[in-house]
Length: 157
Image (cartoon, rainbow, N blue to C red; front, side, top):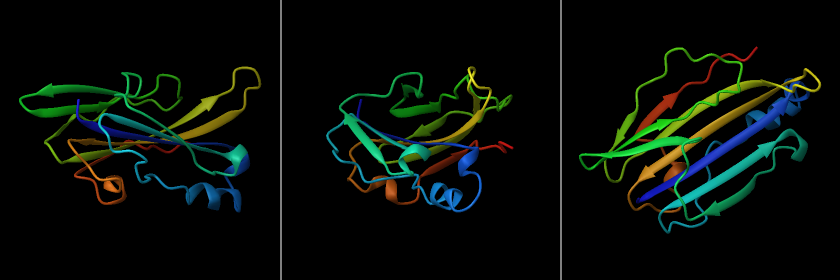
């Protein structure tokens, strides 16, 4: 399947809820240049409080699995539905519909979560951005404005 997918994940605890750590967290990018545009490509970028929100990246020539996104080719369009984690405490009773991508278009799908550490009872937080393009792309495809934007972020506090 000719797709470029980028998953950007930012994780933090209550230690990064106030300044100056929150300033660094809020400055974390939601998109990056692709390191390789040979399709398919899955580019994962992780940033967290422990590493002072410095990006760690990995890229593979694969399609993201169903834990990240559901993809279905329908009449030459790619139907995209981001998968919401079942582990977060934010309840999404009504999810937005899937997005249909034509060749050359892309979607940015944003989600966030509040999670509990079962051993300590402490809360942690995670923001995820899925950038997904259908068809051939350049390395800087996700640095511009998306064709479609789905923002499912909710108040976590």
